[in-house]
Image (cartoon, rainbow, N blue to C red):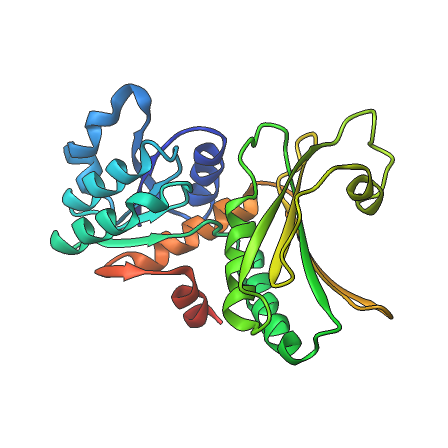
Length: 263
């Protein structure tokens, strides 16, 4: 199939490599210096576009691509305030959109397990949940989009958890590199958390691609599930698979629908 890339940073390069490995053709690469090419003839030949840019540029990129008649896979996060506007425009032009905070197949399997575990814990009040997420030092926002998606899954499935609470962000450096997460947590000042809220603590360390842990702790034991990305390739592969899936479709889709079909 023919794929257009919108955004050509580290993720864009990884997506390009994996798409070519899977036998696909890259027909257009859109970046900051040639954004007008979204309206170009080469872009319009694409069976799908994969968008990884910034919260400021993603909404307009998606709408322009949909207007050009190209289904869009969007991995940019941080534009929830414009989501309804974008989806309305995509629908009006008869386009297709699948936007997700994380396209990793492993992460989305993890999210299914996370939701099931949260449901099981609804009637076991002795278990209290918390979440940790770790990313590279270049990621300044917190919690991560994936952490928020996981938290929303817990809220949807567990009758005792009604919100999530940001406990802040901790930098891992030479001063605390040998400490455990529990020791670090005990050493920092954290906001008061409501009993029905899920605490989320963020760490920023080195070049970590992404690690998410959900714990359910009781006075006698602790159940913990973790997803650890080894590289960006998992995100890139999932995005390419999503492009393969959305080609020829019309409408607004979510990653759960795609995963249901794949599984």
